[in-house]
Length: 196
Ligand SMILES: C[S@@+](CC[C@H](N)C(=O)[O-])C[C@H]1O[C@@H](n2cnc3c(N)ncnc32)[C@H](O)[C@@H]1O
Image (cartoon, rainbow, N blue to C red):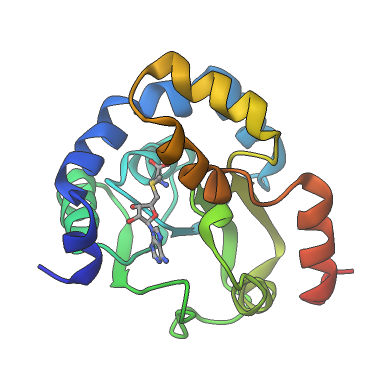
């Protein structure tokens, strides 16, 4: 087991992700997603694939033919490859810490859907990844970042105390990651990464 998997109980985290999958990826999500992706997409790359439930659903819903899946956790990658087994698509799994490196082996201009769910907010230096995404997108390609937006500590604390899972100190600690980028921050980051 590698460092990322030791730092937290990644197996339990993975089970939680699977259990709550349908609350994150509900009908509203899929309606929105279908509206923003290009018609008849062929390829997808997912960053922070987790247990792979989204990726499998996306491949099957849109009959995708080729997928790239990245995560820094071996536990997540193992679950994802098992979950996605048997789908009719070519899938490449790769272990990569997106905080420090950018996957380099995806062919330029080849990806119709670049997707990341509940990861982008955790990235400290997202510009190299955004620059990479710009080069990977096919002519009709779309980037979808699905994540928590920036909000006030008061709101964050109210929401998390309802779940009763964490102390105030833990909530404040989580707040840094959960409340990182607003929509306007994303606009600035995309501009800096060279998007028009
Ligand atoms: C909250 S989970 C979301 C998983 C999946 N996208 C979903 O919505 O079901 C975030 C995922 O990103 C991965 N992750 C977090 N930080 C990462 C990093 N620096 N590099 C690569 N993967 C990372 C975690 O291992 C986890 O699988």
